Length: 63
Image (cartoon, rainbow, N blue to C red; front, side, top):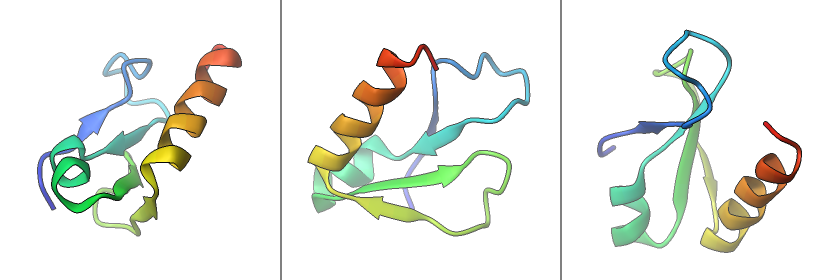
């Protein structure tokens, strides 16, 4: 998998957050999402529309 990006809300404090791979998403048409604390764990693949909805929900909740 390509480079991962952490949520801008995580503030590098070791808290709970998700990571996604924008370069993979751009070239493959699906967005990989994983738990930042379990880098070797499972990866959830979501559609670009699903990712947009998830980010919008998190923003609306102040996450």
